[in-house]
Image (cartoon, rainbow, N blue to C red; front, side, top):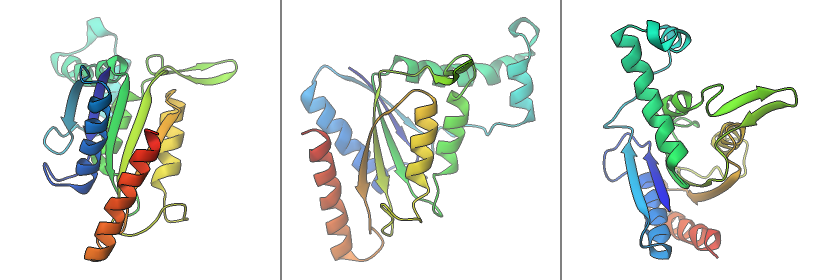
Length: 199
């Protein structure tokens, strides 16, 4: 099994979403000791946002790209190759101002490429990143699960499903800024979610 872990916390170490993601990976490796793990820290390896220059590079034929354009496309190509090769994804996703971190959004924009990770057909869009299992470690300061303040889960279900990834497991750690008792409860709930996902 090839595991790709994407940590999107702004903290290089110690982020709650990263800690939960690490727990998920530990559980996966316990089940498959031969599993390989590739970890990408989006805070220390920041990705550029999609902009006019990036779109121009993608729309220019490979033979006609400048060195700068070729380097820009190569960056996204490497990210796409990582996810194509992975059997299992583990995404560490903190909640920032009710949404996903910009670091994660930049990664999603980089891997979502028409004709490569999805395509349009006469029957509608078709995701090409199929056959993958995705675990999402959701860390929140408050409690948002199954409420109208949770914009993350609907967005992630939509965009990952659009790319062909529908085997999704959400592991929630909530209430982490609501005091020591809430932290203990939130982390215990995350462990219970994780146990249920692997039951």
